[in-house]
Each structure stands twice: as structure tokens, then as C-alpha cells.
Image 1 (cartoon, one colour):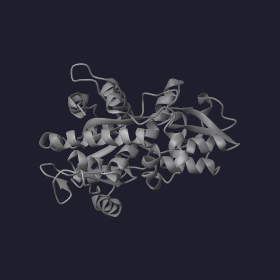
Image 2 (cartoon, rainbow, N blue to C red):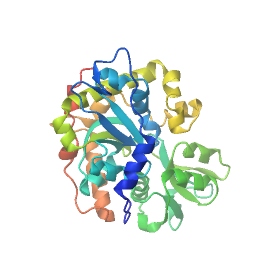
Image 3 (cartoon, one colour):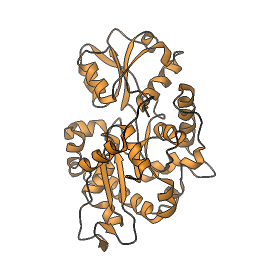
Image 4 (cartoon, helix red, strand yellow):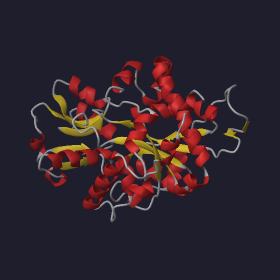
Length: 340
């Protein structure tokens, strides 16, 4: 969460009501009671606008979750504070976001359990700068637009640290990642931490370029779906069905890319060409990719290390007081038991 920010739960609930989208019906879907497949608790999921979440949107729009046996409703809530307040209040039972965000929110008392990986940023997030700033070391003393308490700030801190600097060496201006990119393209700030499509727009700008991106640091920003601990304990069949529906959505994206991408252009506000281009820097994971990232309880995957490192970062920054136990926030069993 942003340091010092307070968001009312009522605001989050209002946002949910405005943006909620339910799954469609299908002749091939199992018998249902209302929207909910018999015996399955509906999943109420929220996330922001990001290319890595397109599999979730496709799964709902094409009815794959319903075919798998569970109703999924998704809501777009851009502000993570509102999103997690709604999650804590029980208006949501699932959230999609990055590992570093989950490490911070778990440390701050909003318990969640990650069960599925969605994507990795391999050039989809980065730091854009004016042409005359040619090295990370030159960021010292510069004004940097970056969303406080966000994945973008985690990326900035990580990159600075790799070059002998820290957040104290730059002047931070708090803007959301999208607004930071827009501000940079407009010439309002000399440096911004943002994501696609703003990285590409920066490269098209004769006065700007991408100074550093997750292409050089491919392991530190990944997106996951997490559920509340109570939901995981009480509704394992719903999570299994969710994974099955998601796998169907990813398969559809691969086999029918034009139809699948048409499902998400309005959600992203991007052209089909832009969506396809961004899939190069934000590849959508298969279930097998996710399995490798999560590992097993006996042999944890990379997700555990990223969770702990980012948690240590938030503690050093003063955003949290503790480093949570990754075994309580990551459950690889659903992936490892998944058989398609």
C-alpha cells in the first residue's frame, strides 16, 4: 500500500459495483444454480489494467471458467489500496497482482495465498528517461515519477541498488505507473517508472528512451492469483476448477489468437496489434510455466525467493514491520495436482 494512504472500503465497493463482469452461459456448461456451478463457490476476482491479466478476461468472456465448473466475476480496480481494502472486507475473495505486492500486503495483515502464476515481465516494465540520461548512475538527483508503494517502486529500488544507488538518491514524484508514463511522454518529468505501452511510446519519442527494463531483470516482476486463506481452506474444488478454466483460456489464446485478443482490446484500451506486440515482453504463462515457478512444498520455486527479497525491501523502506513466511502465502499444491 502507499505509505500513509487510507482508502475507505465503501469507495472500493462502489468501484466493484461499477466494473463487475459476470461469466457467460454456455450449452456445454455443467448444471448450474443461477450463475454458480453446483457445489462451487463463486470467485470474485479483482485486478488492474495490465496485459498479463488477459487470460483471466478471456476465461470469463469465452465462458471457460463456467465450463470448468465455477462462476468467476472479475472487477477492474486500478488503485491497489482500494482493491486490498475490498479484499480484506470480504467483497472479494481473489486478487491478481505481483509477488512483491503480496509480500507487502501479507506483512501488513491482509492474508492471501497465491495459487497460480499468470505472466512474467521480460521487458514489459521499465524506467524511461530523457535521451541525455544514458546510465542508471545519472539518475542521482533526478526527479523520477513513480507510484509509491507499488511494483514500479520495487523495480526502481532494485535497479538503483544494482548500480550502487538507493531511493534516497532520487527525487520521487508519486504518480500511478500509467500516469507516470503519460507524464514522461508529455515532457512533464525527465524520468518515469512505467510499463507497456508507455515503454514503446517512450522509444518512439525523439527525446526519450528506455533506460532499463525487466528485460535485464526478468525474474523480479511476475503476476499471480491469490485467494483468501479461508477460501482456499473451504473451497479447494473451486480453485481446481478455476485452474482448469484458466488453462482452457490460455489454450484458446494460442489456438485462436485473433478471437482471444478481440476479447481484451476494450479492457486494455489497446489495438490488437499493440496487444500482440506486448505479448513479447509480457508472455502469458501456461500451467506448466506456473508449476516451474511455484515448485513444490519440498522444493520451492523462484517465487519463494522473490517473495522474501521483496518483503525485506518493504521492511527496509518502512512499509512493513515483518517479513512473512512464504510457505503461508504460497500454495503450490493446486498446480502440482493439476491434471488438465
